[in-house]
Length: 251
Image (tube, rainbow, N blue to C red):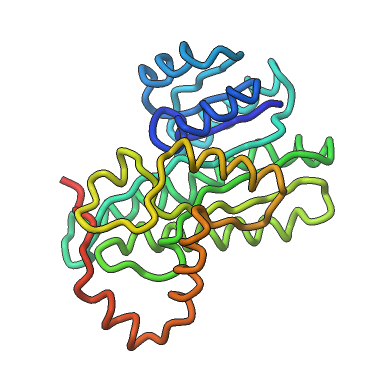
């Protein structure tokens, strides 16, 4: 098995790298932090190519993809996991730029990740493209408007891509994590129901991808919550979330 993964240096990405390494996969790991990538590479015990790059840089992502394919062949699985999360409030001018950054990484970064692999996967009529979105994409979360908007866009982008690639042999799977114990969530100053460890998430992620699911919410309890939120009338949703705890803004 060959797996190419972005956002691999910590959190969910690191857990996924360790999960697939335990399956004996050959890995291509892309992230901005080279030192963390090299440290992770030395602990996995399988062939690992590392690519210090930013997913918003299409040229760099394409170069990494081409390098991996030249050495190891077309990946069986490409995981677009790179993402950022900060609280945002539109009234603050500084947050306008933060909003742009979040959208660029969480949405355009996903497009950049998948783009170089689609033609090779179509050519061999096989492969899985896996986009990591979030349950935050099901409703607008107050204080996290950029993150919610980016993840809603990621969900719809993956859905569009899935239909575009129907019949080509290329599977598109959208994974929507709930609360996963990572450096990203440890800063959240509010209760996080159904919080699960990153390694547990990675195992469930692997099962969903292997089953070629089109959409999976992990853990399953959050799927129930997400479905309830999507059908909740606006006046009830607004009343329930108006005073909810909010993610800290970027310093």
